[in-house]
Image (spheres, each protein chain N blue to C red):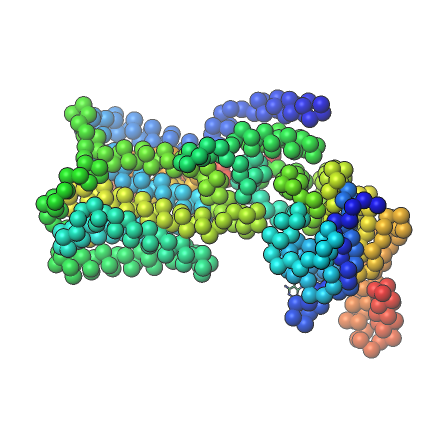
Length: 347
Length: 278
Ligand SMILES: Nc1ncnc2c1ncn2[C@@H]1O[C@H](COP(=O)(O)OP(=O)(O)O)[C@@H](O)[C@H]1O
Ligand SMILES: [Mg+2]
């Protein structure tokens, strides 16, 4: 009886809270507003930006960055970083290229082996971080340099080249090409299959984060690791799975790059690792973990993709992209910090 | 007398050659609150870590449900329904109350890739369980970090009760709280007792312990100063034992530092402290 009356009273107080405040408290809101602004800006400033043809270019560049940003965001929510994520995209693509063009392995087998290699590296990253208790920033910086060295040196040693050649001549190339590299003709523009992958990855990540036990654990280990352990959350397992997720995403993007362009450079993905982190932060992820969203990270990547291409269409100096990224990052960090304070402070 | 859940006989704990606790005897009964009192460094945390399974005891006997036990991990204690709410509460501040409530033991529905959190059940249960403990939350969706210290403490208690605790160990739940908030927490301790739980309430404040306690065990410098049922002890006596001991001890230390160990006054003082100790 008393409980029932109390519950009603509580409901009344909730409804008095402004719905606007609740919406504004979502982590991805800032990125959504910024994405709309960037789109409108370049749509007005340039002729091609808002055409089907123009959009296919920036969507494609946003898609591969976006897949990585979503995986990196999940890892960051879990309280860790993966600086090897960029080099991983090159590594997996190169691995398939070398195994097929130089060693003559069947293409699907090569793809599978490259996935297993990526996952093994993900496990290695995770186990090293958990076992040593060192910051993942340092551990994966190590993995990053190893991968970078392997990508460049080993590719050169085996192929004598800095890129994979003759990929499209590999038997059954058409099959993975259809899965990872094809494009649909939409209204005179091309809708690359990577964009669909990006949407699927974002949707699955959102589902996992918000609707599953694993998602609950990801937020928990990033937000308060000791507390999580005390209530029985499998901390090590959750974190290792997250490192596997970024590695797996690196593999997917590696395949998308390889089969869209039918080649991959030995330095592919190097230098991109910070772009992923920036996209995740612009999308509302806290650098300290425990807070963020997959949709936000995807929007962060969309902003990056649009700006990257918009600057080209507008005929500006490409270096403005860096300045813009810096401003976005600072604004996002300030906004996130403000949101976090509001969420943590007692009312 | 009600069912005895835990009996502790002459229990002790050594860390290497440091004797953190020795000769402690008390008991925990269903529907009763056992208070453990003592100053900082008295051994309170050491004592509850033994009950909670965080550290095994090195001397004496720990009897749960009539059977001698030697816990080697917190899981051993949890399996017997002994739940501990530590001072940091084991909550994740940025997560909503309902997610925190079920963290680590989330109910799911569906199967395979569609296996998902049963959000409705989680939210509803959180509301009703908190209401049953008399906690009136605006909204279970708010981050737990936005709750007051007392409310957070209460959520942690309600969670332990919901997940089948028979014995609830609370490590200084009122230490960081103001008068009013402390009152709220004391009310929930009384509620938990009414629900038939055995509560072990650690505090250094006799004014918090006395109103809710049924039994008082006083610790000083790792030794028990006795284990008293409420009928044997008035609030004044309890306060005197706590304050008297602490003040004398502090004074004795001060004097020793000031006058040197051999001075007559300091020696008499430390004699007095020893007498109180036994
Ligand atoms: N792990 C440990 N190793 C060595 N000594 C310890 C350890 N834990 C506690 N002690 C000692 O045991 C004594 C009691 O500490 P504790 O139980 O934390 O007291 P309280 O919780 O009452 O403040 C202190 O003197 C402390 O220094
Ligand atoms: Mg203590």
